Image (cartoon, rainbow, N blue to C red; front, side, top):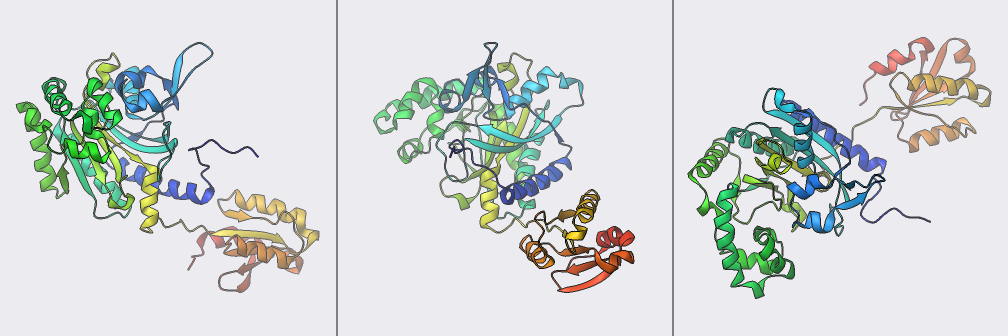
Amino acid sequence: MIKGPKGAPDILPDKSEKIKLVIDKLRNFVEKFGYREIILPIFEHSEVFERTVGEETDIVQKEMYTFYDKGGRKLCLRPEGTAQVVRSYLENNLKQLPQPVKLYYFGPMFRYEKPQKGRFREFYHFGIEALGEDSPKLDVEIIYIAIKSLEFLGLKDLFIYINSIGDIEERIKYKEDLKNYLFDKIDLLCEDCKKRLNTNPLRVLDCKNEKCIRVTENSPKILDYLSEESKKHFEIILNKLDKLKIPYKLNHRLVRGLDYYNRTVFEVISEDLGSQNAVLGGGRYDYLSNYLQGEKVPGVGFAIGVERLILILETKNLIQDKKRKIISITPLNKDFYEESFYFYLYFGSKGFNVLFPYNFKNLKESISYSLKRDARYLIIYGGDELKDGYLIVKDLKKETQFKVKKDEIIKYLQEVEDD
């Protein structure tokens, strides 16, 4: 038997229905704030991510699924969505629209990494991006939507880790001082972080290794290196979060691990996932468009890891399956099999969730089949009732049955309330 690839699980109907339910709620929520859906290609030119995410990042060096097509073009399966959204903004000249342009997306992403709880090699992101505006109010809006969308799903006791990593010029001096500080303690760092020192020392702050966390606990803080403009931007954000009563904690180690971020970076934290407790992450990326050889387009957004979000919602029993009124249709006996099959197809075309016993044997087995599939009503097609223009309807929950005129059955079942 050939099995599916590691880290790319099949999403069976029970799980896919939960994902659809959650994503539909997120869509409805963000649309209230003016965000509109963009559908992005699953594969992309590799340089979109090499230029923006960073060639020295784990994503680019270790995790991207890269390949060459028959024309010799270097492509990859997308590892994240933000860089794609900015590429689309530039390519489709969305600057001609009223700014900011507010977009959201949902779909699979791909990274070659060790599968773990709530994270796979093929995984799903839901994200929002607001492009074309550098006002700190937009940062606040994004953070507000991040928290409130999760609360809309039923989550409580969430908080935000937040930091400002300044602009490019401010980080040059900071990186130099951080690098000098870490070089004095290089023997205490993990092997990956020893390599990162020469490429991008900010990555050391993002490391989850306990040894590296202890080393960076008293390292220089980037907030001490911010320009007056960046400080003011960050102070406005914190002040407005206070007024909105959004709980947050300053985290000087938070850098988000991607090269394109500047100024605001944040994560929404849940304590229900152990060490992997970030449900949602985002920030500002005013220079990402420059990396794509476009003009400067300010932007800010976030992305949710859908699998980990579903895990939390399941743990807290917050995903209530949408109750479907399932109607089973069966012939009274084999004489009515063909006619009842066509009636079943007609009934389904009217918007009902319907079942049919393809291997019909007798009425008793049809009732058993309907109960196993959680049908609420069973329509029995045939007999003297049909000759008189009626159908027998069994309420399988109440264990009652009654007759309804055939030409009124659709209207009746559309209006009947489940209890």
